[in-house]
Every structure is written in C-alpha cells, then in structure tokens.
Image (tube, rainbow, N blue to C red; front, side, top):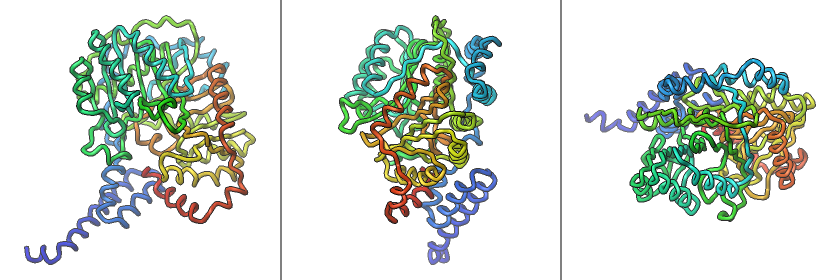
Length: 482
C-alpha cells in the first residue's frame, strides 16, 4: 500500500496508457477510416484520461455490436404483410427506369441494402420554412382519429412546442393513440410538462437518456430524425424540429429550412421506421395493429423511397445513396447543407463530377451555429474550389436545409447533414424522390437561396488570415469527432 501511495500518479498514468493501448488495438481491428483512426489515436496519446472519455463516448461502433436490433419489428406479421403489399410490378419499375435511366441504380441500392421499397402512390408537398410546416402540422393533427406518432430530435416546451404538445394532450384525451419519442440530448421538455402529457394519455419515451443532457450536446448515437405520422396516411419528414428556433415569426435570426408533407404509401415506410425505434426505447412494448397501416387511396404517382441510416442499419444507406446519385449525374448537382464535413468518398465524387463538366453548386451557411463546425466546413472549401465546384455562403440567416437535386429527375430531402455524424453515427432519415415536378420545386428553392448567398471566389478565399487557416486545420482534425 505504501508503494501504491508513493507511486499513485505513475500507476494512474500507466493504467491510462494501458487502456489507451487496448483502445488503439480495438480501433485497428475495426478497420475504420484511417483519418478517423489516427484522430482517435492522437487524442488517446496526447490527452491522458480525457482521451479515454472521448473514445468511450464517441469511438465505439454500435453498428458492429448490433445493440440496436430491427429484426423484432421487421419480423412482425403485420409489417411483413405491408412490405409485400408495397411490391411494385414489373411495368411500374420499367416506367421509373425510363424516367431515371441509369439513376435507377439508386432504387436497387436501397432495396438490396435494407429492403426499402420503392413506393409509387404518393402525393408530396414541399415546405420551405418552419412557419408553413407548423400551420400544416397543426391542421393535420386536429384531423387525427386513430393515432399520432412523433419521433423528433428537438421538441422544446417553448411557445411552439407548447402549442403542439397541448394539442397532442387534447387528442390523447379524445382517445387518439399518441406516441412520442424525443432525443434526450436535443429535446428540452420540463418534468411538469412530461407529467401533464402522460396524465392525458400520451405515451412518451426518451431516446438513450443521459445523465446531464445540457452538457452532452454532441454525445454520440443520437436520434436526429424528425418523423410525424397521422393515422398512417400523412407523414412529415425533413429538417424542421419543433421549437421557436425554427419559426421565423418567433425567432430573431432568420431560419431557412426544408421539410416534406407526404400522403401515400411512403407513410407506411415511415411508420415501420418509427416502430423500429419505438421497439428499442420501450424495450419491447410493441403492439402493431392493422389500423397503423390503413388502405391508401392516392391517385398521384410520385416514386419515393425512405432511406434510413444509423447504428441499427448494416450499411450507411443515406451516404451511399448520395454517393451513387453524384456518380450518376450528367448535368448538375445542387446541394444545400448546414454542415459540410464529408468523408473522402463524397469529396472525391464531387471533385470528379465537377472536373467532368457537371455543374456542382453547394450552399452552406456564412455563419454557423457552431464555431468548430463552421471552421471544419470551411476547411473543405479550398479543395472544392480547386475542382471548380461553386461554393455559396448563405448570409440572410442560418440555412438548415438538407437537400440535393440531380439532373431535374432526382432529389432528396431529410434530416441527414453532409457530415460524418449523419453518415455514420446518428439515426437519420431521408426521402428519395424520383420525380421531375418535385425536383423542379426543390431546384427553384435552391435558386432562390442563391439570391441570398455570396459565391466564394478562389482569389478572395486564398487571402483569408493565417488564424482562420489554423482554426480550419484544427477543426478539420477534430472533424471525425464532431
């Protein structure tokens, strides 16, 4: 004991580096991105004790350990029946192939990787800001007769959240089934409000609760999805959360965002996705009824797939979809994202596309809501400019839209940012739409946003200060951890 007391600090450091060595060996066996591996190893070696905490919270690959299991949900008889009913006949697939030509590879990619059915009978409404979404959402919630399901990264009990939550309590008191999943890091709902919701009949679970959510804003494996389903017939998906921050009439800083209101077969795919998360948070309290998947009477034909990715999927489905779409572009690729911290595959694909005379334009915020994310994003601009990619910085406020349009025939809107976290760590969901009309609407919004953006000129960008370049380099090094 005397020896331990005299050498306590040395023993502590020895234990730290022994655990760091084990963590390093684990990282090498995982065979993940070399840059990410090197970043973790540097943090483990240079920052004793802190490095171990960073690795514990951020470095483990839950996709490999399979702690998030989807099989229980997907094996449900009701789900299997719905999946079979969504099978599309050969003629319908050929019609989509004729529209998309080579871009139909996207459909097959998702179908093969996660059995994401291509749905045809859909009506899609593009929503260009939070005020419009809130109005439509409240109208739809009032019409609910059977059930309302929400899965949201951020719900706050501010003015906007209170308006929505009060209506949900009212519907639950009327006998409507109301189920809510909130991310424990992103959402802020008081205990009093939670108690009131539960008393009214609302069933609500927190996704992966943490002890001090206020201080864990970047904790790994968060539920970043924004899904709302009304009676299995209407669904919402996109970038807009439920909070005053997203409502321009209630927010001092202008917030540009994009969301979708979907009516049709694709809502069934959102419903299945919701149930996979519900099964996890409720630890098996899963009761799926036929009423959750009503008959769809929609005449409109808008081909649409729901792409989901996260630790519960075998592949990085959204990233792979974006990668395939970029590689199949022939005319243009227009991207809007609040955070551009992509992997090497996406950067290379964009550079090659631009150098192949395909018009590539990207809109990012001039001023981000995170300084380290802003500098990390800026660290990629130079390489893009060298390949003649056009980069625009949105200056009217904060652009939070997550959209991509390719060649007027394909577009995607969802929750996934163009960054490591969305591609590999968080639970995300995107709608992939194969339709000229919807693509043209998203393109028109993109062109409108260009009017409130300034193009980054290579000569001007080169003249930024050494301090900015240093901060970009530091943030770039931390990019795999953001």
